[in-house]
Image (tube, rainbow, N blue to C red; front, side):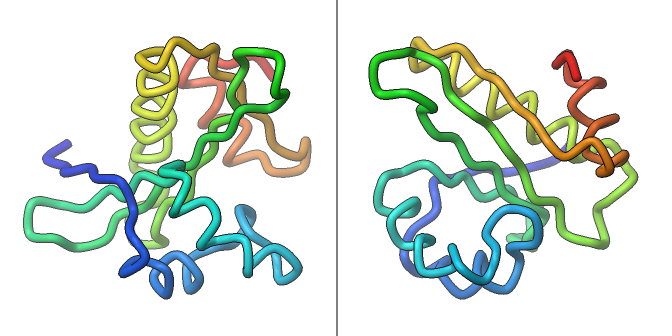
Length: 123
């Protein structure tokens, strides 16, 4: 993929808010600035700056080095392998930070489950 990635800034707040399905529900939408300020959201764009999706990571337990990784793929980039690309990049990022990546989704979410499996996660 010809993709540029960067850490989200507060300038991306509305973009993320408008593209939050299965990442931030209505009760969590006000948490977006927290995750942006923590440096835990990575934006993925094509080489012309068009939004393709984002990844998010979070330490799951304060005394463990495990990090949950997740992703959102813009609708026009779905079913093209881009979700696997984002999850791979997020897992690499967490590993670079010295963490152990893990991921999960609801059993009914077949698309996300397949994406995680393609990226090497067990479901």
